Image 1 (cartoon, rainbow, N blue to C red):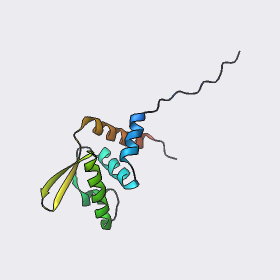
Image 2 (cartoon, rainbow, N blue to C red):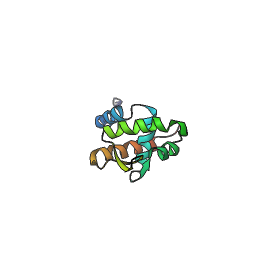
Image 3 (cartoon, rainbow, N blue to C red):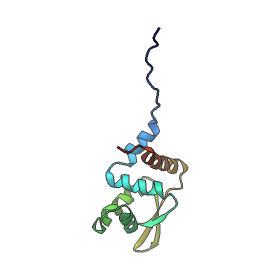
Length: 113
C-alpha cells in the first residue's frame, strides 16, 4: 500500500518576516542592515558606511537619511563625536541585535543561483 505523499513541514518565522518588512524597506536599508549584521560591533560614520557598501560618495546624504531612519526605529545608536561628526553603532537592544544577526545569517546561508 502506498503512503500518501507528505509535504515537508517548514515553520514560517513570522517575527523575522515582520522584522524584514518593517526595517528592510528599500535596497539601501537592506545594504545598511547587512553591513551591520556582518559588523555588529563596529562604530562608523555615514561616509564610511557609504564607501563600505559600495555607494558612490555623492550618495552619502542618502545614506545619512537612511541611517537617521534606522536611529528613529532604534536599530542604530548615534554617537555625536563633534558638532559635525556622528558615528553609528548597532543597537544594544538584545532582541533587535539578534534579529539583525539573523537577517545577516539568512542572507549568507542562501544557496547562490
